[in-house]
Amino acid sequence: MNATSTDAGTGTGTGTGTRILTGDRPTGRLHVGHYFGSLENRVRLQNEGAELHVVIADYQVLTDRDIAANLPGYVEELLLDYLAVGIDPERAVIFTHSSVPALNQLLLPFLSLVSVAELQRNPTVKDEIKHSSQAAVSGLMFTYPVHQAADILFCKANTVPVGRDQLPHLEVTRTVARRFNERYAPPGAPVFPEPEALLSAAPLLLGTDGGKMSKSRGNAIQLAADADETARLIRGAKTDTERRISYEPERRPEVSSLVLLAALCLERDPVEVADEIGGGGAAALKQLVTTAVNDRFAPVRARRAELARDRGHLREVLGRGNKQANAVADATLEEVRAVMDCVY
Ligand code: TRP
Image (cartoon, rainbow, N blue to C red; front, side, top):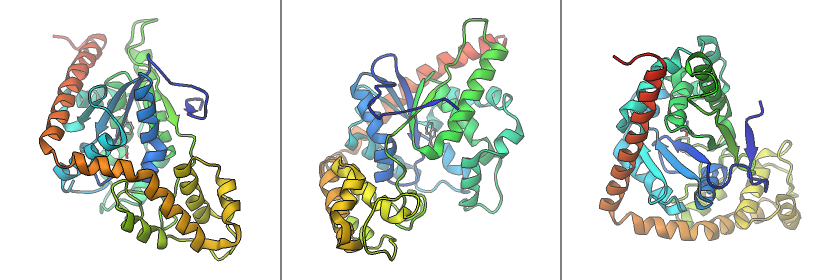
């Protein structure tokens, strides 16, 4: 696969001409892993002039659970996180998946372009099935990557800032775009771009239990957490029995993830941070991480608290985003139906 680039100073994917779609499921507040894995990139690209679309993927909550609990509350939490980190609704389109019917109509033709075997071997789907709270795997779980293709392609996004865990999904999107163009588009006039993943230069952060950091697994440091909660979570984080702190992600994943978190917050090199702590051990490491996280996110947390006081503004932002997303989706669906010869 040659569909990814990183933000490691290459300038790839920056500036105008870049159309971005990315998003999150409304299942909880966003955490520091989201920030360094994706949010930071979204904001940077927006500020460099890219067109940014952010989907709040409410239907997709049902992929791994039977009931999508507290949707209005979680949608609001996501909006607050987005606005607090600097996504600017004057420039970006933030919308809820279920509010854009034309987007979801793309799912049917897209499903016809992938095989069941391809869906069954998707590693992200496999991982989510493993952590699913459903008694049986639903059809929606299997079609999840195709849904995501519709999310990305309805606005013809060419760039998708995501965490590494989402790469298999993006590969499905590229496949769908390519096959759709091959099957239906007139020669030389593709309907959809084959979008590229934009990975953060930061390696993946682990949760405080050493597993994947996840907003629904209770192992995440939320952007909105206060200083005490942050300290408590980091105090309880898993480490290992070796006294000397080092940055060796393969051999010492838990300790290295904490070092990395401090380094990202401080904008420093993780090896240097680890060397400085050295024989100070896990206690010194945790102290450093706590201060680094709390200092780095203090302004975001303050802005978030301020925004939370004006619910009317949040509703207005979402209403405007939904309207814009519908206009874009209607136009794409019209084009799709035209090339598929479904206009009657
Ligand atoms: N699957 C993503 C998640 O679990 C959310 C998502 C939905 C998404 N649609 C998307 C991400 C499109 C990137 C692009 O968080």
